[in-house]
Length: 497
Image (tube, rainbow, N blue to C red; front, top):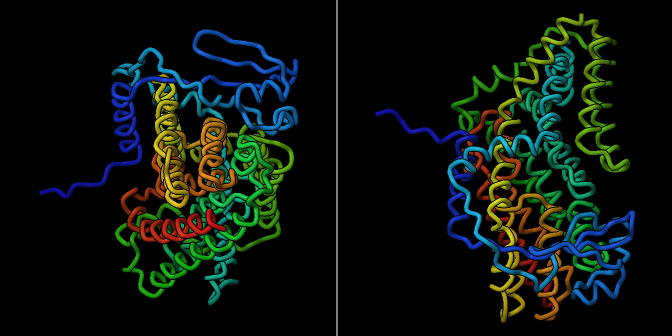
């Protein structure tokens, strides 16, 4: 009898999309009224089922709507998305998503996620050009020789740097670019691809989970809760340090076991395939010439430019994609690749990441189904009601789990913040705790579930290495349990301090 295989990432997401479509027939449709700030006219637009209403952008307007947020949070641009208005939930006409909507959802998702999809494809093109030049092989061979006996430094350094990017400016989707580059380096260091996946994905996840100055979670959530983003910063920083330490130690323990005995690798059955996919650069005969050093310098500068642009210049996917396209063209000139070969290699490189791009689009399609079925606000409404009358220790941990569950349906951190904070943060007042603890519950709940969330980035990340979701779960679940227990202890203590 043929052994059953765990389904592919695409199939998992299609199954989830089918379940979500089914939920739109079970969960009642409902909406909160929303409030959006118009910077040009200095007015608020209140949108409800019946009408749109233009209101004066004043503190009095916010007070009348029972929105406990300073007007400055809107006028300064800190809150740039429409927020939910508390106590305005109402049921609306059901919009169950049928077979046609289900079939259309992946296509709609691909269209909606076009910006990140093009970024991924252009990164693939750049990687293809870099592989063609031989600069990767030469650089990795040199690095492997340099780190001989000190390979563990690579694990610590990569995890720390990516966690730093996650906590400061929300380094998440951008990490897709790092897998094809770093996996060959980890393989050259005699680790398996899971170690590379762990350093990048765990680093990004723990960094965004314990965001300090991340504008897409900590700052926008604090603003939407009506508090300064520095409130609770010390606690989040301590969580960042301890959480990152736990992730690094966990990864090091697995990495050392694999290095000592490759058969202990969770990916041992795929060892040859993965090495063939990413090449064996440790035995490269290509020397690191001056030209190849310059090519590697341009390549590294693409990432430095991307990080600087996102964190300082408000760049997003369009600008990042342009950086990688320009970088590929410059490297093509430096390597003296003719025009026909350049186009051919670039397209082949992009096609290598087409599967990843499709996963991102299908995942976005699940969000489309929920939005069209109008069930997200209903889930939020019942979740907020579920915590009434709870002891504050139980309450804060319930919020942790609620946010973890909600992130399955709303994987966007900024989207979650503006939708939920105006509804959830006032609940803190009722149980006598600070609103910054709701912000923490939002960050930690979303962050913990992000380690395994199939509607988030993990399936796209796994697809790059062609690693099954089941193997990732086998690797990461003990860590998730450790972090969950640790987080619950910290959250419980924090409400009584």
